[in-house]
Structure formats: structure tokens, C-alpha cells
Image 1 (cartoon, one colour):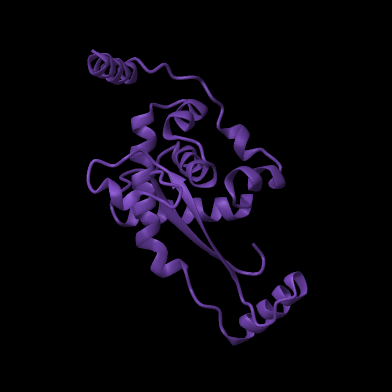
Image 2 (cartoon, helix red, strand yellow):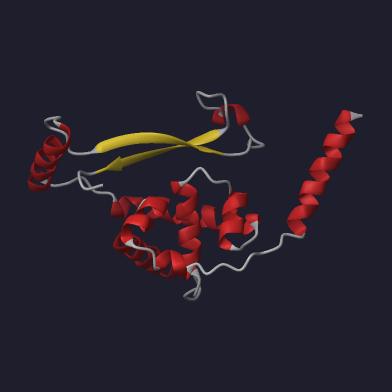
Length: 187
């Protein structure tokens, strides 16, 4: 009996997606935030965001993945950055940005794949002069000599995937994917 109730609840949840009510949101207000607030929410400075926006848009147009310049491409990138920068779910991000959850996932996969493809062009090891400057800066900030950057990993919660769910269990026995970040002395 309780299994039947569970199945009915799941069916009701699926039907809810078909009647998702969009909330009108002015995403441009995010772009008008002061830089400290913007950086806190999106983990990028506003100039870094604008640069990433241009690089991604140009790359996607050249590769034929973006047929025409989308007016809302900044909106899409902000949604994906919000997911990467916060523990929010796709559902809560959909509500925050006024789109359906399925669209958030579609955009997320689209942007992540583009970033993966661009990684080889954007991620470069610093030259000798840059490394010296970075070592001095890191030592001033942290007291650790010979350090040129900082590395960390965080776990982004996900729903249990249908294929190989055990591979996505983290040390807290929850489903997640690991995101590893390497930053230089300025970030």
C-alpha cells in the first residue's frame, strides 16, 4: 500500500513539471550588482564574467553550436554559474531565474561541455616570471613558501543517476559530483 502511495507521489511530481509556473525575473539586476556582491554569488568578478561571456559566445558561434547570438546568453551563463557557485538545486535555480527545471539542466550540460572543450585554450601554466610573482604573493598572504596556487575540491549534490549510482556516492554517503578548482594567488 505504501509503495502505491510512493508511486502516486512520483507521478504527481512528474505532472507538476508540466504545469511549472514561471516567475518573472529581471536577471539584469544580477549584472548591476556591485562587484563584491556579484563575486560572492557567482564566484567571479564582473569583468571575469563579461570576459567568459564573450569567450563562450564566440566559441559556440564558431563551432556552430550557437546559430545566432542569443539575447539571453548572459542569463543562461548566470544560471549555470549559480549552480556551480551554490548548493542550490536545479529546481530552486529554475525558480530563481524564471525557467523550467529541465531547461536549467539543458543549459548546464551545454555550458559545461563548452567549458570542457575550451579548457585546453584557457588553462595555462604560468611562465617563470609569473611563478616568482605568485610565490611571493602567496607567501605574503599565507606564510607558505614556494606556493604558486591553491587547490580545493567541493562536492555538488545531485540526484541519484540511473547508471552506476554507486560511483557517485561521496564520503558522506550522498550522491554528488566532485568539482576541483585551482586558483592563482589573486583568487
